[in-house]
View 1 (spheres, rainbow, N blue to C red):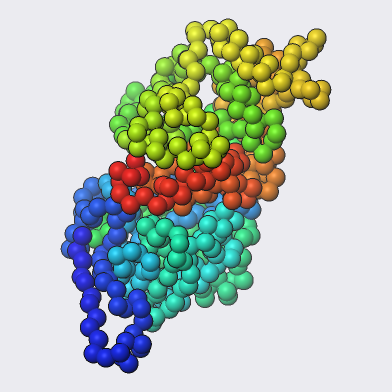
View 2 (cartoon, rainbow, N blue to C red):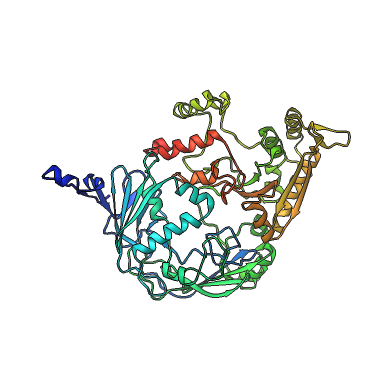
Length: 553
């Protein structure tokens, strides 16, 4: 990392009082910042190492999206934002595709911070302009921060409010964020540099509200601006020919398409037929049956459509069935385990997925962070205090990492059925004379699976049938896209079981409070399952305080 050190010498005690305390610290000035270790790109890098800086500009790429949209605001839980609706907005710092935990200046030329990272100053580029041609200044950055603090997603602003002490505009192109004492500062310069910047003048003149759904896009400084919008059906993004940063090393070879078009379909099969008809040009295939059996049409044989597999070494998606743990019946881990035993992945993979999938067992699957075996000595040392406090069972110190159950070749695995039955019996859900499981209060154990994708019915219906064999009142409820949004977002959380994602980052920090923290569980758009665990909360604090990659791991 290229660093410059600023040392202040003082001549007398009277003069010391006039110098801010932060100015007496050793200050690092750099073109980027890394969570751990050094930056890979030098200050004078000419382009990102994985792009062709001479890539031609022009043409269109078109893709498909599921459902519809009724908003151009990607930062509100109200409405459904159009695809790529965050594209017009840039942040002060940006990451790269080949480095983990590093961010570099985009809207800034340099950043300054002390070794303890208790504050950061961003030196903004004076040439930055919004897409309407007006200059971006530190006042826009301050306004954006204040707007997200007051009106951003509730879980986000709840965490943000615990981290930032003050924000100060030093001059039109310099802004300083000071952080609260007693909270980990490791990630905060990068976090503040990652906030989207919007035009204050346009926001106020248009009487916009970040919390509300709107078809009036905010104005940002990004490479693309809204083009043709057909509400709920199609949205097109157009490359801004006057983009302020097109000659920056960070931009060379990127943002090449003149237009990016997104076509919406309410049904997966209809979207595939649209691709076959040439309605859009690129498709990332997610359906195993389509991949295995659907690409036998003439355009593929003629080479007009290229079907290819690209190697992907990134972290797995974390796709999973998510319980709504706000509901009392799912708070008993035995009930959750019993229900999980009834999903037969092996049969599904062989019968429905053409053996194309592998089971995900870790939130950090396919990385060096995924859990393996019993806890190491170092891991046990972190867990032991939580066991001593009674927040975790002692068995966590010696048990192997939890792996999903293995099932047999038949849809209903009898051994897993017996295990699930024993768990529910132990949890107090006994089988009645009608074959249904009830608790001591006479309530039937019911599980409603909520689904808005017709193509996923074939995965969920066998799961429902297996649960019925267990004595569970299971059913699949099909809803449309708007209903799914309404029932799975705060404040309603009106569901039992859905398909979703267990989220994670390669280098984790305060976002874990949004994904898994108790404080935000009932307002979070990310912790959809509503996990509230004092043990998890304490472990998140440990993660946030880690000072090296080894500590984090």
